Length: 148
Image (tube, rainbow, N blue to C red):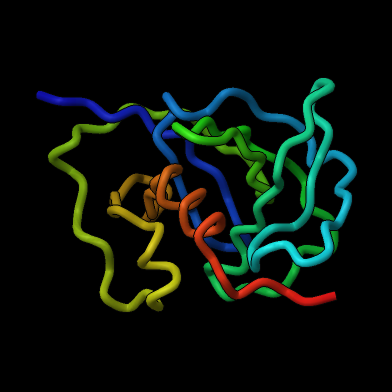
């Protein structure tokens, strides 16, 4: 049996997860510095232990209102870049059988479907798995930049 290790986090009322092997760390949200002309979904940059990282706001993909103050971040390592993802709460790291992964729900909008790779029904509810690589690619390849 193949097992997947997921880092589960909360964004508003939604449970989301990423492959835990992509998570370099977690921490408080830190001080964000906005970046004029940044792609949609980029909240700005944040200084994490002396390194400047792009901070992504998943609320854009899930069409949620902006958070008054993001509570935490996950540092995700991608093949090309390491980013901070703003979240409301980091919940748990769990191991689940890969066979429990279900297809992406068809009710999600296209933007959300572009980064979600599967769903798991766990004791706490439905958890949507986000692919860290797809998330970073969707921002770096986004030509819908906000103009100052």
